[in-house]
Structure formats: structure tokens, C-alpha cells
Image (tube, rainbow, N blue to C red; front, side):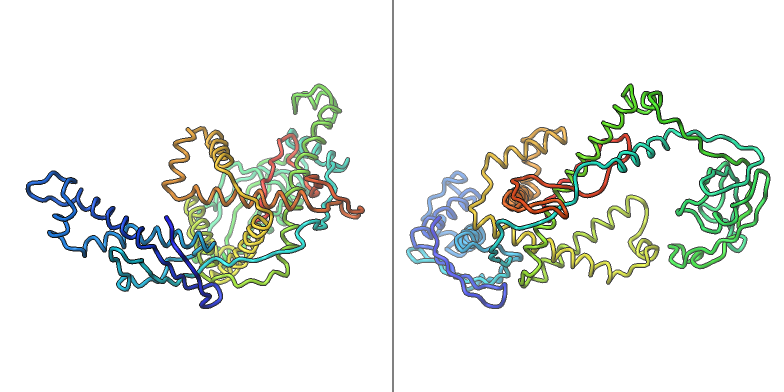
Amino acid sequence: MKVKAEKEIVDKNKVKIRVEVPAEEVDRAIDRAFRRLAREVFVPGFRRGKVPRRVLQARLGMEPVVEEVKQTDVPGYYAEALRLLELEPIDDPELDWDSISVEEGKPLVFEAEVEVKPRVEVTGYKGIEVEAPEEEATEEEVQRALESLRDRFAQLEVMEGKTLAEGDFALIDFDGDVNGKPFPGSSAKDYMLEIGRPDIWPEFNRELLGKRKGDILDIKVKMPETHPDPELAGKIASFKVLVKEVKVKKLPELNDDFAKEASSFDTLEELKADLREKISRAKKERAEETVRQRIMEKLTRDLEVDIPRKMIDRYVEARRKELEARLASRDISLQSFLQAANYTEKRMEEEFAAEAERLIKNELVLEAVARAEGISVSDRELDEEVLRRATSLGIDAEEYRQVLEERGLLEELKVDLLHEKALKFLVDNAVIAGEGEEKQGREGDTTAADEEPAAGEEPEGQKGSGE
């Protein structure tokens, strides 16, 4: 398809596109329109689809043919013009369909106004200097992970005559009400409560300290003002509490026997070595994300670009729907969640909008780097990614591709791969050092954040795109 296209900036990210389709292409489009109509129109004496053009034209005239060309071919001419002009629309075009003239032997000319995704140019993106935290596991981290694992294998022992202290466990029965009416979660039998935990009512923590088995307590609790149930918000709840047992945690000895019980290793040293390796691996994976984020922060910090409000609004709406779906799966309304979190819709949407602006800037920078460096995604790379994802989901690759195409997600996947390749280029060409160290160029070698996985568990790597 050959078309001529030119653009004119109308306002910020809005452009006017003028498209001219050569006469010979218009003639072919008219022929195609006649053939399509011939398959749909019944004319006595002719088989469907075999009606000669002259007969069809005499019977129908040119008006339905012109409409067919407009509906079927003009969108393709418009898409080709966008490709030639390297424009990415963010909305449907404003187009005067009635002004489009379709005549044999004459070019087809039309104009359209459309808001497009902005484009930026970036410089100095090679050799960006960033720091990353130390990636090797420290002895303190290994010991902390070991103590966490040890805590998971602790036994609770009943202590007769002991008074409750921080870290002890109380087996209790409790019954509560507000103004004489029970409410969800206001009563329980044989409830095990750890004294001092921050996620229980502070009044329970305070009143249970120093108590022993057999004590009966009357505890008043002020319900939070942000409670989602207005009948409970800010009210005083009364609880009758019976202490049934006092228990203390007994930790196992850190020795080879513990290693055999808590893991597949025979010795404590082998267990510690495994924890050290897992912590280091997790820190390295998180470090790669840290480096990516810091590179993008440097490139976008002073980037000035007018982001169309429609792009931000669409992101905000998508995030809102995602949040509502997650809450609905737990039978929680958005309003109840916001009230409990002491949030307003306005504040939530403002934070989503700020997040959208940051992510869109990241995309624009990555696309600018890809253009400057000639980075692209081949059909083979796209096929490999489709296969990889299909395999991870346990479904057929062709079926997965079909689903992506039907939902219009295949092109999005290709864009994601382009962003990943551009980000990898930035990381490979960055100058990276541990915090406090002298910087030195290291292709693809990064450091890590000071965190560790749960003891005895495999760390979860974080895949980051900097977006």
C-alpha cells in the first residue's frame, strides 16, 4: 500500500495528518469493494459473488461502493500514514468522513487530527554512574535468617504459676460487644495470643501483662475511627477475657540435630552455607532492580515532557479497577478500604497519577534509547517469548498466541520486550560500584539491596524493567 503523508503540529501532542492515496490504489480499492458487495447482494439470474461489476453498479449505484471503501480501506490508509510519520495515537482521530471523496481515476485525500504519544530525545545515557548496596550476605544476615528458622521450630511449653511477660503466649477465651451487641470477631475460644505483638489491640497487650492462669479480665477497647463499619467506628468495645494457660517459647539448640530437623542438610555449617547462598542470590537479584531504577531515575529526573492527560487518566482508571478487583475477591468495597486506610479517593487518584507520570516517562526514555541505538524486537524473539510464557503457564504456544492476538496484547508484549532490551543496554553500558566504592565499568554486573529471604525458603527474584 503506497500513500503519501505529512503532518502539522496543532497543539502540544495534537497533530493534523494529511493523507493522499494515489489514483491507481483508489481504483484497486473500488474493485475490491465491488467484489465484496457482489458476495453479499443477490441479483436474479446470477450466482452470488458472480455478478458483473457493470450490472452491480447499474443496480446499486456508487454510493454503497464509496461507503465500503471508506469503512474498509480508509482505516488502513490512516494506519499506514501513522507508520510513515512514526506517530503513536492515544485516541481515535477526528475525521470528517463526509468530506472524503472516492472517485475512480482520482487520488483520495483526507485529513485527520489526532492526539499522539509524545516523543523525547535523550543524551548522555551511556556511562551513567550509579551505586548499589553490597550484594554478599553478611554474617549478621545469616544469623538472623538462622534465628528466624529456629523460631519456626520452637515449641510452646505450659508454665504453671508464671505471670505473662513480653514474648509469652496466652491461651484465652474472650467475649466482646459494643453497647451489648456482639460483632464479627468479638469472641473466640482457645485463642493463642502472643504478648507484645503490634497487630493486636494495645489494650489487650497492656492488660494481660503480669496476669496468670485463671485470671478473668474486663478489657475496654476503643475501636478505630476508621473502622469500615460505622456502627463500630470510634465506639468502646467491652471484652470479658479468661486466661486459660500461660506458655513460653522454647527454642531448639543450634546444632547438627537442628539442621537435620529443619532442612535437608546433615550439619549446621551446611545449613548456614545454604542460607548464605540464598541470601546473596536474593540480594543480587534485588540489586539488579535497584540499579535499573537508579538509572531510570537519573535519566528522567530533569526530563521535561507534556504527557497527555488521557494517558495518565487511562492508567489511573486501570489501577483503580485492578484495586477494586483485588478487594472484591475478599468481599471488601473500595470505599470501606479507603475509609479503613484513612485515604480519600482524591488522594488515591493523585498517587496513581504520579505513578503513571513516572512510568510513562520511563517508557518514553527507553523508546528514545531504542531508536537512537537501532534496538528492535525480531519476530523470532517475539515467538520465543510467547513460547516461554506459554510453557510457564502450561498451555500450548499457538493457543496462547491466539489469545494474545484476540485481546490485542501481542503488540503490547512486543513493546515490553523492546523496553527490556533498551533497559539492558543502559545497564550494560552503565558505570556501577558498590556504595562507597570507587566506580568502575562492569557490563551487566550489579550489586544488591540489604535484604534477605525468609529463613529456609527459596528467595523470589524480582524481575524489573525499570518501569
